[in-house]
Amino acid sequence: MNSIWHITHLELTLRIFEAAVMGGLIGFEREWSNHAAGLRTHILVCIGAASIMLLSIYGFSEFIVEPNVRTDPARLAAQVISGIGFLGAGAIMRNGSTVSGLTTAASIWVVAAIGLCVGAGFFYCACLATVIVLISLFALNKWEKHMLSHRRHQEVMIRMFDRPGVVGRISTLFGEQGVQIVNMKMKLEELTTMEDESEPVMELKFSVKANSKEKLIRAIEQISHSSDVIMMESNYGKTYSYTGIQSSRAL
Image 1 (tube, helix red, strand yellow):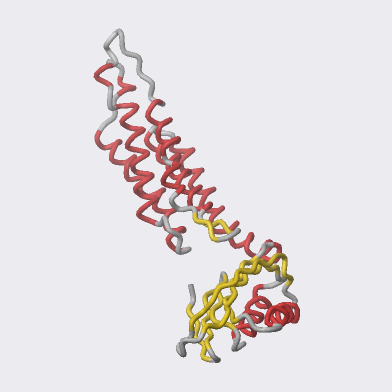
Image 2: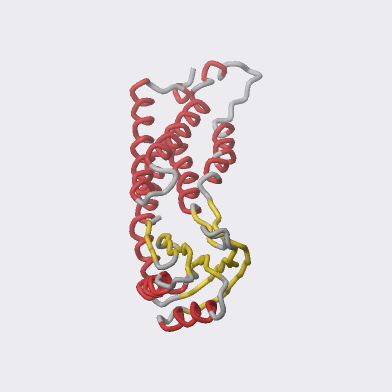
């Protein structure tokens, strides 16, 4: 029987451990950045993909001698590539016009590919892919945030009492800090106060653009000091304000 279809226990163990290390390196970056799929998820995906690849190549070696059996080592690998998408989809979340988790979903898919490479003994490709992925996640992430942050729209949600002139005052506070309002959505509702009196409340959703994060934070802080504001929510946290009493909680 051809030895190409056989693998020693030592080599199999080394491949599984190598898959765990490579998946763990990428997962550590996701864990460090506080993303949903972190260290353990990436390790499990990479080990699982490597195990399936090993099974696909070496798990059916006893059938090689059968004249009517044709083996295809890529058959199970193809199912991993198409099936791993459901796990990545679970990391993608949408909040208004903002979509998060795409990079984590992509990293899960890449980790599965790295695991398949390790399982097949394609070590150079697995190592090269791991290094490039780590560079993309660490270095390019910082560069992207620095270079493109001023071009992205930020979402700010404000719940406030529907009183005359409040929308104009909010817009003025944004303008004073150089924050441009790109889009605004308004929804009216009604709030029952402690005195059993109803006062109209509206929810404003702003899509804004600022040249720097500091300007947007200053605008949010100034708006939160208004007695008309009940609650604000943005990428930088939530601020609650009711009759002048305020508290903040970081997301």
